[in-house]
Picture 1 (cartoon, one colour):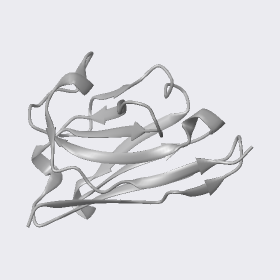
Picture 2 (cartoon, rainbow, N blue to C red):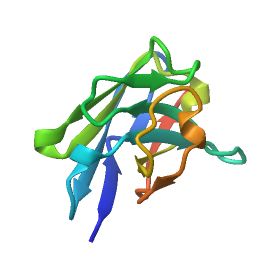
Picture 3 (cartoon, helix red, strand yellow):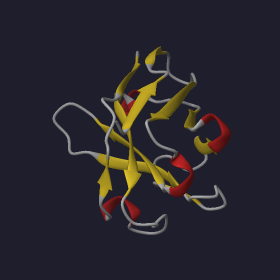
Length: 126
């Protein structure tokens, strides 16, 4: 069974950090672009970051640049999202997904993604 599972969410103070993990089971992540997305209550889902198959290319939304870092460890079948300098507006559920197409560039979040995890909640208390 192809499955992604996010973890690492929680309550964090403004300026704090969290590292989210996206672990795959039932298949290997090696051949896929992975995207991290967020969805806040009452808002549409938006993409934060993506990483290419070999990890050599990464892309960040403007709101994430300079604060978030995406990385992959194919040996552990896991992709990470390190989030620093968190702001109240970062409060959301965070999801990872497999890129159907090998696209990690401008407009990547409009490409089709599949095998969504259930998400992990990050709440920035203020």
